[in-house]
Amino acid sequence: MVVMMTQQYLAGELSQLLAQLRAVATDDDSRRRIGDLRREAESMPLPTLASVAVRALLVADAMCWNSIERGDITAFSRQAAAGAALYEFGTCAGLLDEELGRSTGRLNT
Image 1 (cartoon, rainbow, N blue to C red):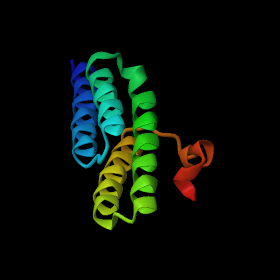
Image 2 (image 1 turned 90 degrees about the vertical axis):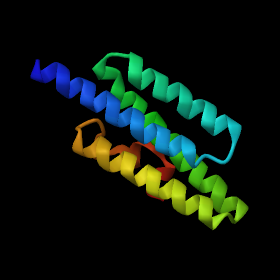
Image 3 (image 1 turned 180 degrees about the vertical axis):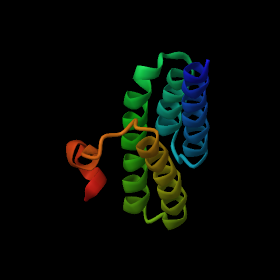
Image 4 (image 1 turned 90 degrees about the horizontal axis):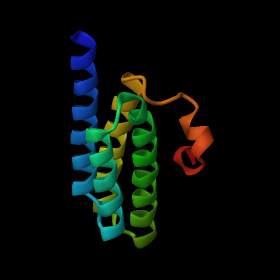
């Protein structure tokens, strides 16, 4: 029972963080991608949550770079905060590998 509850908590918390990330998206493509990831987090088995978290961080990273390129500091600030919360949760929940930044390219630049 405890394991099931923990799995449901992880999926629910990830879903909530994805909703927060979607709320600060500034383009339809990002909103669609995050919505798809949120549905996946809510409906797929626990082992897929790590993949969802990594892909969400990549979307957050792209959103931040897009905002910087447009000079939209307000959007960047909100997106960076949402991405940081997602990263912190993923790390604490054991969903993310410490090497994430090195393996995905732009996240550590």
